[in-house]
Image 1: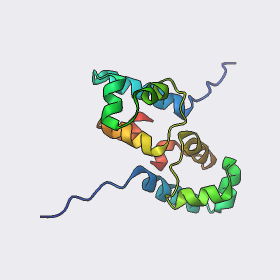
Image 2: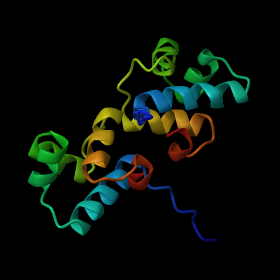
Image 3: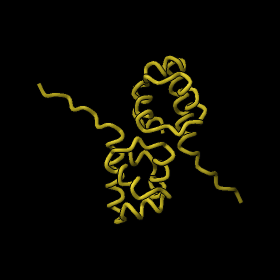
Image 4: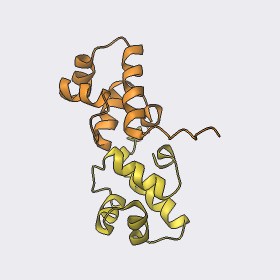
Length: 73
Length: 73
């Protein structure tokens, strides 16, 4: 019997979608961090799924990429 | 000239949608907190928009209400 796949945790989904969206715009983590007024290393750790990111920072990153939050979740 | 309405910040949207979803299920903040394994007072402060809630807790609350995160954002 095929094992039901566990859903990907929101943190991982956000990390994957953020990276994809950033690369689609051809910008670096540093450029995204600047646009979102966040630290470069913070953006890196979010993209690695290491951060339990807050809703305010999720919103900053979405705005910086001119996306809606739900596009990244 | 009609002033463009400022978009409602994500924190406020989440607060409003969380409360609406909880009331639609007829459960109290305390019952929701228990389902999500969070503190009752924390759920209250999230519903008042006072909390810069993290993605892990957003996911816990959505799961407790059997909703997707995007349903609350």
